[in-house]
Amino acid sequence: MNRPPHWHRWPLGAISLVLAVLAWGGMAVGLLVFLSASGSPGDGDQTLREAQPALFLAIGMLALSGLGSGVASVLAWRLQRGRGMAAIAALLLALLGLVISLPVLASVRDPLLASNAIWQRAGSRG
Image (cartoon, rainbow, N blue to C red; front, side, top):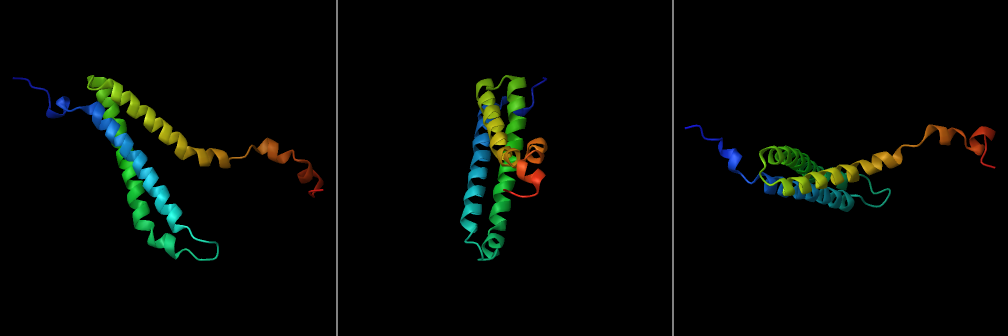
């Protein structure tokens, strides 16, 4: 008989939701490790170097679980295996992507506004 593959019977919506929450956990762990490794100015970077394996593990967990959640969400939606949970997982991943990209977006300055400052034209801040 023509049976569907075994992964067609998996609860893909729940898997995608669990992996999306795991991706958020990876970001939280990475942030906590980074903040605990950053010391006072002038202390050097030895604590950050010692925390590198934990940071790489957290970033790897974030990347792999995010990718797995995205794939599981698409499969759950297409195979109709937990569409609601897949939609929640996709929203969580989109929010995670926004939170990760916020520092990058905040650091970009508008070149038009930066070049029109009065003190930059006059050559002084006065």
